[in-house]
Amino acid sequence: MNEIIEQERTDVNAPKDVEGPLLPGNDVQDLRGKWDRIQTGFVDDPRTAVKEADELVSFAIKRLEESFAGACQTLQRQWDRGDNVNTEDLRVALRKYRTFFDRLLAL
Image (cartoon, rainbow, N blue to C red):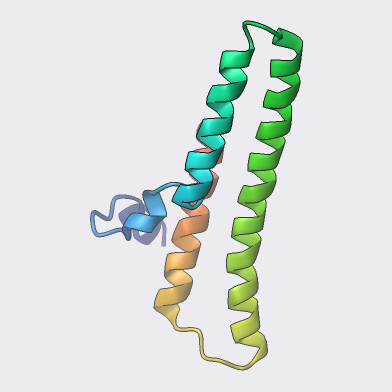
């Protein structure tokens, strides 16, 4: 079993969305723009910049949680309707979670 898991870790055919951004591109771009404004504002008002940074990080974490919760809810609705969720869809979902988990632990 561990061999299968390790093989998945090194699978060069991994779906690209598994290793891509954790949030949609428009969210990432918006968050980066806000961060740039906060960082620039530090010179004039450091205390406010730190407060805004805290709020932005909290918002980003919340948005990330919402993104993963939405994916989970989609699978749950399929199961609740009795739809047959195929093993490949579940495998991809698990890989996304594993990648996210590994990235969290690497921080």
